[in-house]
Length: 86
Image (tube, rainbow, N blue to C red; front, side):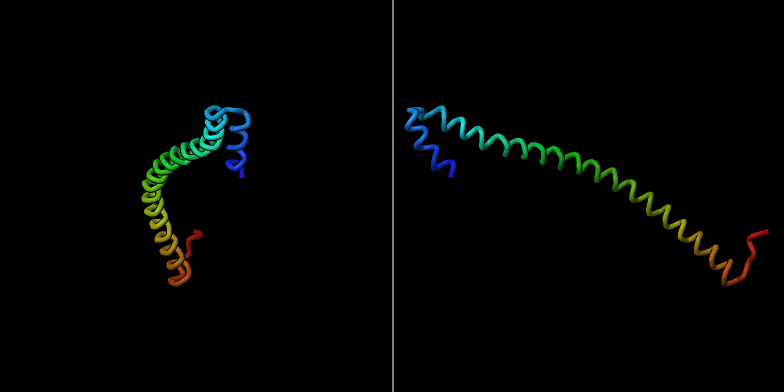
């Protein structure tokens, strides 16, 4: 729609270079800006994911140990009726 009105506008103002160039920059600039934002966001997201990956390894180990300890506690308290209150 806009491109269809660009050609008659450029011809009527006898501007075969300036008006199409401004139109081209105006339509390309938002695309370039969003592409840069996505590219840099993806790069930093990749770094954050790698940091999260190393944290996840330790979180899984700690969670596993906690589940085992809680399981031992409940087994001793409710199956074997060990009294921990003193």
